[in-house]
Image (cartoon, one colour):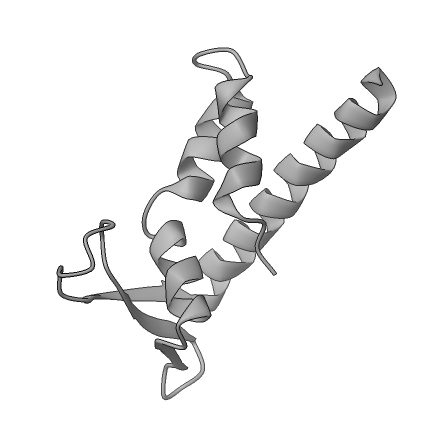
Length: 100
């Protein structure tokens, strides 16, 4: 499960320039993670033959006429993306709840 771009884009907008949070939000909303979320949404992915990761296809930009590009992600990288997304969102929502 991935939080939509809206969560990380809003957080990016409201954090100080150069902060670790802002850098993480940028990383989580840029390629190849953005392309991966799009590929999942459109069922444009498959496991590698040896299950060492995933192969997926997505556009690098938002132009619907752009051809699909190939991407690959290892299980280790995928685990990192998921852990980073959980960590950033957990901290953000915990802070927002305590600040309210």
